[in-house]
Length: 402
Image 1 (cartoon, rainbow, N blue to C red):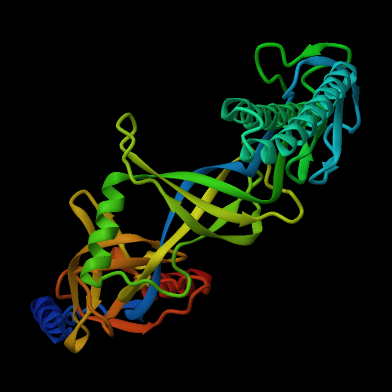
Image 2 (cartoon, rainbow, N blue to C red):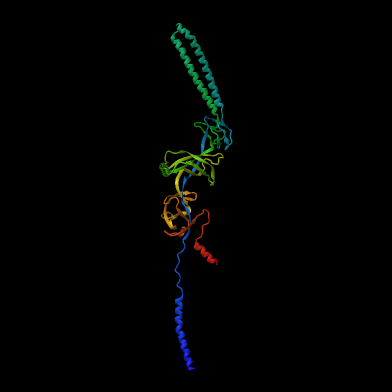
């Protein structure tokens, strides 16, 4: 029994000594952790920059004016007897608008006609006398002075007849002015003077106004600086005159676009010293008379076209404190940051003045994950498509769903 007990103790001691050794060997046999793998390239949506001929378009605030606005005035003095039109209606050229009391002018015409008749009779008598004396002076039956007096009398009565004829014409004209006629077709305004009032005393009284509205003017102001830049670009060829040059589109106060376009017909030759602007004017067809004088409208004016213009989507351009930048995918799918000089917007695109050429691959989506020189996985960008989520986000979402 003592031998068995000693053997048992010996075996137990051997087991206790072997256990740490086995644990150590087991720890050594464990595999080392795998080395960290590189993250996959960031997925980005890209588009190719393009070169096009684009219109040079600017927006201004314009004001509508009548193509022709004619003031109807009383040209003779008298009592305004009657108005012959409906305010705000369409009138035609030559239409009777007002009647001024014609009585004193009819009397004046009759006096002038009577004086003309008297002068005509005196002329006939003077000529008859001159004819009777002409043969007598040749026979020395009368003095030369008597004949010359007869000739002078003829000339004097001819002058009197001419004065009488002028008085008749003046009286007829004044009598005609008692009927106030429209001198232009268009829409007539409100009556400014009521019937029964004395008009024309000391001045030609303003009675109403007729506006021609089948076409209208739209006036707008351009800054002198912008005008100089455009003139310089036209002279250097950067901007050229195309088929749509010097045309304007009009947007009404409710935001809707007017259905017709206008053409520039006048440019002021001086700069307004108080505003530093130049006034331009376009002629707009206005068949339905939607455009009314005094209305403020938005003018989208096309001054020319710019060939070989670089365009990229607005989403591809990032505004920074120092300017505008874009990311370009180069060789080996490495991205490069480009500083840009941008122009104006053209629909959903930026016009790029400097910093980018045609045919370059530009990142549109996935800009937030980019760093200079980083490798990316480009895929084509489709306008209007929903932006794709990064692969890491998709993987995380899939794991969460499981």
